[in-house]
Image (cartoon, rainbow, N blue to C red; front, side, top):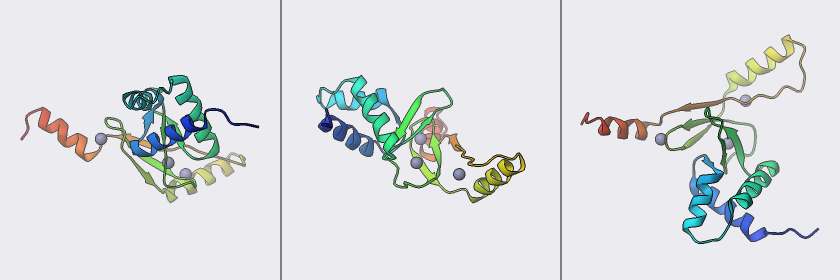
Length: 137
Ligand SMILES: [Zn+2]
Ligand SMILES: [Zn+2]
Ligand SMILES: [Zn+2]
């Protein structure tokens, strides 16, 4: 089958890699619009969904219910620390969580257990910027 819009998908993939942190389809679309690529929001959504389905992008929901995407360096199972202000993300391993999840699932007779654990907070540089805005310096 011929894949349509392949260059657009590649462009979305590049923009996602450039973004660094977790971004929404809207903000990625805004970046691409600034670069006059002519890629529509619906195409960005489709491309991101495709990348996530292939494991080329991580996707998660922000506490506000927004779908966010990131091109993570780690393809295997991992967790994230995410700044809710700027979207910067750190990939983390959490052995204690893996153990707890396995044990808890087994205790309740669950098999094939999966879990999603991400930590949202404010990164050090955003916290600093906020302090400056308040005039703490
Ligand atoms: Zn990730
Ligand atoms: Zn931040
Ligand atoms: Zn885990």
